[in-house]
Image 1 (tube, rainbow, N blue to C red):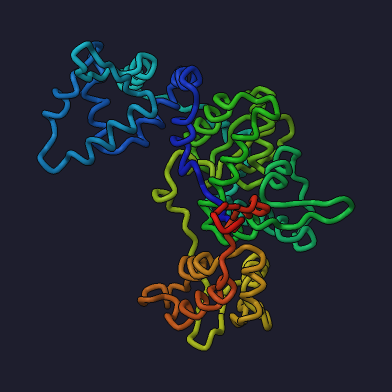
Image 2 (cartoon, rainbow, N blue to C red):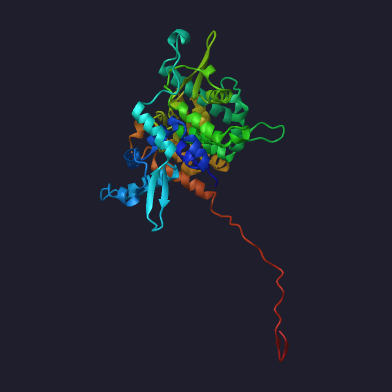
Length: 416
């Protein structure tokens, strides 16, 4: 059964996959160099800083002498990452001895950053112009509302609390893998779309951003420029206002797209307009595991297969409908049950048992999240058994051969 895969776990994986000339182009930007340095494993940071002012190749054997006896595996991981990102250039001489040389552009920009100090990507606008900005709590609520509205748009446009006008570039991403549409029919979720809804919020964000970047060249946007601007945005301060008029047309279009997803909030004054970064955009330069934007759980699953979701969110209700029977909804409580029929419906839509169990565990209410296991074992076992009922026969591609010529043998007694 196909599953949505996050090929690039973070921006640095996408940076590493770029062609050599685009990587060098990216390293012209000081913020990219700083973001790359931050993303490196601890040993990788140590190597970069120790070689930062050395302009000659350093033998690999000399670097290995800095290691402790238990650091060999970490050393290999660090070196591989540095080479992937072209921070280190590998040089092999005639004797097949390996040396490493820092990327000159990366080295030059990082030297300036360390010696002269870093600068902000843009100066926040004075409070005399912006007057009252939303608090960080209001900004978090706005980001959550926008993201939930986006997910509701995926499930059903009629479920959105207010009409949403996503840009053509955003709709292209939806149509690319999450939605399908036939002639004169409403868009429907694909198998990948159902699986996407059960992902962790951070994984969902990375999937959308990754598709947005991969789709950039179709829109006539250079991939390196887009990655550079997105990483630059991650260095902005959450809650501060930044002038939109200082951006070029390409950057303003990106700002509008990100505002659709709740990564930024747009505001208009009498003469000026500005954008305010939320935590979603400032987390773009960290990995999925490092991001601290995990939401508090809300689901309790009992041994009798009943579910209690302590939430007033329409989104949570619609997601639970994907694999359970919602019986009734109170102002702050959604009561349902996991049944064989509801799970069969989920399996037919491409959702797997492991994804359902993972969703219930990741979103377990704090009262049960502390328990081991957070979801009763009889429930998880039964979900897997019901899935196995549908997979008793495995279909394997085969080749069928026929109409072979008969084998005729001749003996003294005649034809056999």
